[in-house]
Amino acid sequence: MNLDLEAARSSQALMKDTINQQSKSVENLVKMNLDLEAARSSQALMKDTINQQSKSVENLVTKTLGVLQENGVYACMLFLYSRSNSEKEIAKCIRSRLLEMTVFVGKKSPDGDNSEEILEFFTNNICNDIDTLFLTKQLWEQTLIYARYGAKARED
Image: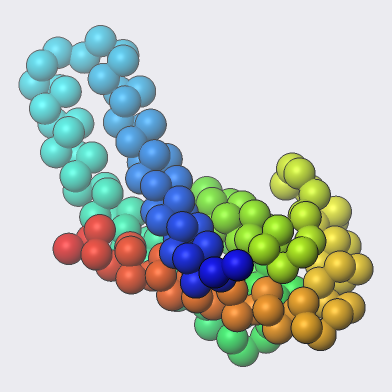
């Protein structure tokens, strides 16, 4: 199995998730039957907010990568669950993609977003096996590095 390929795919999906999240808010404005000038204005706003969103994604991905490298997989997941309102949706996208990656280390994370269930899963299935733990960390690091570069490229 090519884990680098899976990390690349996951980081691309993460970038799409954050773009889709931003696009939905602009689409909702257009669906509200605004006049043409308001629609044009919202499109300009979308471009501005996508750049701002890219910066937010890049910042949170960088912070997440730092926590992962310094404190490990469990701390990384705790960090993502602890994000405040402004980072909450981006953190959820990152968390979701990282959880999907556990399949590639031979573990399937629980469905849903129940923090207690997910953290218990990590304790019992990832952190208790050193090989699985290091493989997960390596895979997540690569995914987050690609995501950070992807957010930076989207910003430019």
